[in-house]
Image (cartoon, rainbow, N blue to C red):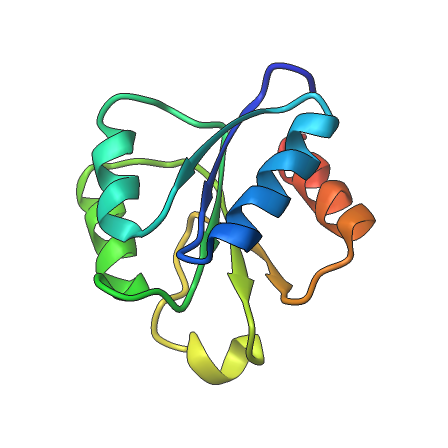
Length: 120
């Protein structure tokens, strides 16, 4: 998996840094974005192999972010991060790009396992 690029998007710096450090320790390349607007701007310049996307962030809603990704025909797989039960909040934002979700707080080994599975 070395060399695979992952974009970590979370408005909470502590979460963003924790996930970034965990991925770097497992030989992934990592770029971060602090919100949906930042993500969309960075996707114009970089093509990650996977996006890890927090669902609840200020600014653009997850639905708006996913709509813009779809408009741009970006097919990058997405793993959602969430602090609440997945089905309760995301009924209307399921997308073809979504391949998994991880509830916060997450287990570090589980996150890495899911990332590796997503990149196979």
